[in-house]
Image (tube, rainbow, N blue to C red; front, side, top):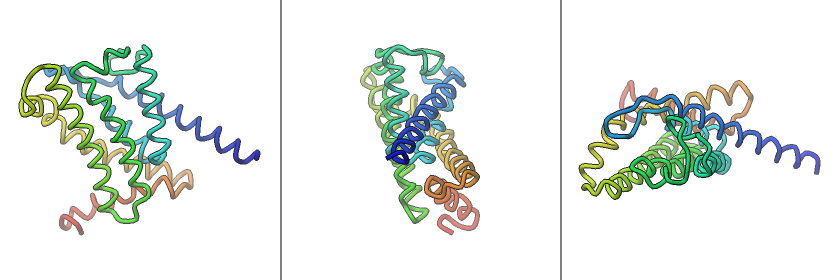
Length: 200
């Protein structure tokens, strides 16, 4: 019973830490004319998923979004409030949910392609939700929204996911946690194999 209670406490601490880390990295922001700043949020969300696994990673990001919606200034540029979830950038905040979940789900994949596929599906879902809401709020077409709110950020976000996987793998291995390192290791195998061909 004591061991179970200790594990639950540790899980809650990890969730709180990654929610806080996401809030901190969200403030490293470069404003752009599109209204969607360049931030380290994608890295933070993917890192939470890769390191914690899908359940706790999802819980950490859900906690972050809940704090922001409640008014805490945890979103980019020290903003907060439920209204942020329905603005031109709000779709990307909602998109953090599938990104964290699918990046974390990669921890259960034994093959590098499966882990990479899930992580990139999460990133794609994040962008699709973001583009959809951007188009809805601005009244423009999906194509115009994609060219403004998605295309300029894709390369940065792909590298953010790979970097998050590497960070999760490195830290987890140093902590002796192979379970949480698996997603990062699988994605990195794909990255290294790309030097000699797409799939090694």
